[in-house]
Length: 341
Image (cartoon, rainbow, N blue to C red; front, side):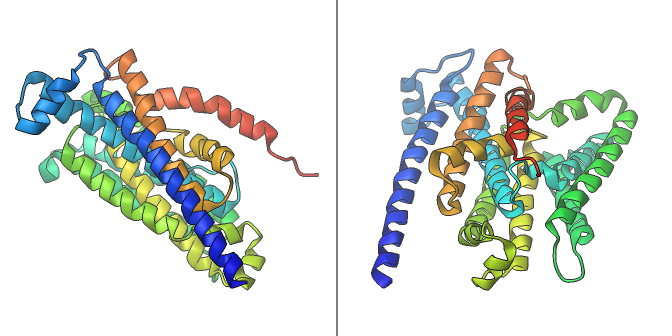
């Protein structure tokens, strides 16, 4: 039994390495190409010269301080939403599960809206809106977990219901704040549509990337348990899976990276729903392979979606574009979902 197990591990490692190297190369090429696409083409010679000598021409400044941070943030947000979506679909065993299902996005939207209405965005060196949105999203997750927790365990159906109810209540509060926003209403609406425009601070990108990296690594540590959970909760428990610890960990870390993404980009829908299914079709249901594949594909997907939105108009919200692309896919998933007998 030892030799086959060792062989399986080597096979998995070889497959995972090839996958990460291949999709990682695609993502790097995507970042390089997307950062060079725009109204003003930037010759490669300018980029290399500025990287080598630190020459700060106007074109170099556009590349290093406007376009590259934007595509890096797009990759970070895309990876966060997709890994969270794939993890929650595996945990809830529901192909229609989405990172926004748990109410975190609504909580973050409430925090961001409050920051705009009460002019708190100038706090913390201008990062007040992002920080408040992240904190509000995290607190919302705590509330959802408290509501969903039964006597000794988290019921998956109760968790989904609690997320929907809390999310609806938070969106009602967002609507209330919009009625009080006055001249700031346009800023709230634009943020709620989901956009990477204006989020060009490398500090914001770095903090978001660090949070997403921690959350993704933590979620990957649950990959084997998610595979066993697909056999059924009772069977997984008999095979040694601490199911309650698994539920809590996946929910919390999915909420962490979703809140980090929403706090810097607004509500970008359908990425966490659509891309995990694309990745599952390409690499199969094994979460040890699925999660890294989904993350890299989601990162590249959102970068290209934002690039297309940027070509339409510099301030065109990428969330509108992903919703236009994702809604038909959602209809397809809903129609092909097995009906109860």
